[in-house]
Image 1: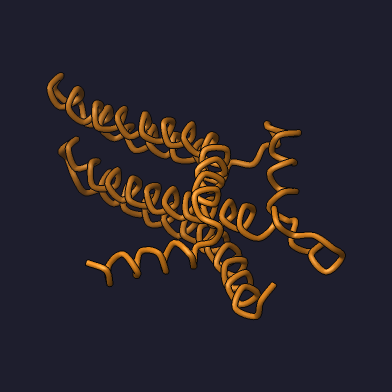
Image 2: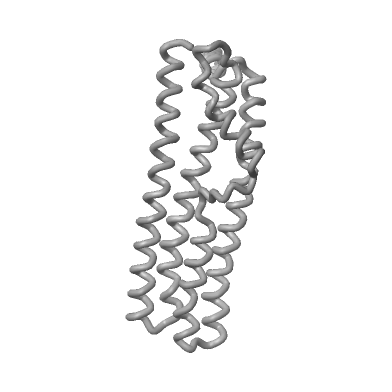
Length: 198
């Protein structure tokens, strides 16, 4: 591995570690923020539609966590294809983490780890809807606010399903990209030469 590749590899591994840690803290802080807002809305607001504000916060936290997870997985597949698949020899033994993670996920698909915290988001969404029912709303309010809550639950479930398939999809895509070009640098160089020729 060249010094530049070693630097890139370390930076990518650091990014995975940092984003993984950030994702957990973001979940905890977001859940506390949502809970505080939900309690405040439940105590102060008489309108069922007010529960949409805590739901918006919950959705924003979820989308951020989902985005971070997607990015981390994508970086992992990039490392797997561009660094680990070409690795050979004793000095490269420490560069097999992504292969080991992929093999573990295949061998133990129901290991109990949920990187998107989907059960917590679904439970929080259901709890967020409780004040709507306690406010004795009219049918229109229940259907409008309830639809928003159901749509968010569906979004969480769809994202969970997409995340479960992402590793294999990204792995195939990076392998296709790699087969089209020997390295990312040669793609950039060929694009620059095309621009210069025009």
